[in-house]
Length: 428
Ligand SMILES: [Zn+2]
Image (cartoon, rainbow, N blue to C red; front, side, top):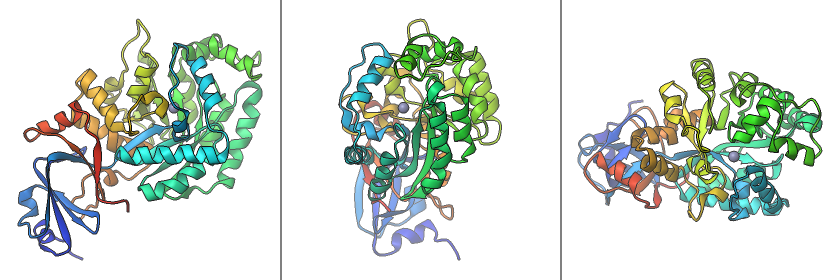
């Protein structure tokens, strides 16, 4: 079969043409651009010259920039209903309040996930890596039920705890997980998330890695975690004692969190979430791993890091640019809605904006982080977060956001201002 040439495409009947200020993906910037839609689906995007003579009803979005569907690589949709929980400077206190307030009945969990899906779709999310909290099979099922209508696909990482006295329970839960739960349903794959190095021991990480499903873990998030991994002391020792999980063997691993966990999840494409505190040695270790098979993906949640006041005084800013320069993919995540203030949408677009405004990060690099790096993290085909190309497939929908200016400057403006985004095209 011959593929249609762009100039044929616009001339066919039943199609709509959308004039865009620019269309940008991780590989190309077209400014201006024309999108051709048919029955609510994107057929082609290219320069006006390549699309050719326009013989179809036209929609003017020439003040807008179009992006592929965005990838939110780390969310906690089951916490959407919790509402604001101020941070008093101690992570363990904050987490305890969240545990008290989080939905616990399946119906409440489902309502929270549904609200999270709605706010994610409103934020241009096409793919999500969601943590189904606290052995959260109800959250997994709720996402599988709600995601298709919103056009969202991705992975639900069922969260597991298990250290000290609680380790065996965590391992047992994981061993039965793949048998009890279908690997894929409603566009949402099953994943596993050993919660963090202070709440999961080696056996739990190994059991998760052995399942052969996507794995995500919080890693190197706080200095308390760094301390606990080093010598078993500090607030997390107290927390484990308070929940009866602590055992005298928990005396630390005499290394940093990356050195502790990375060997346990090698070649699994694991999502390593946060990485707020990275030593040079940890960065080198990630860079070496980045050159191997199925390398890990770093996931940075800039607003969450800011909410929890990272970096602590005297520590370096987040090293995402050094990770990228060393060849480690860095995807973006929103973390839970609790840390997003009054933002109406749950969107990595707002994470991109933070990094652009604070660090001056190149908007096109941010587009790559929010699309192809996230797709790699979630095992989504790269094509699906690229603008369509003749014969190569591509995204079936686009996300548009106001960005006035000239040519390439439009994306910069879209990062500098806080306009909401809209979908071009309906869910498949
Ligand atoms: Zn998280």
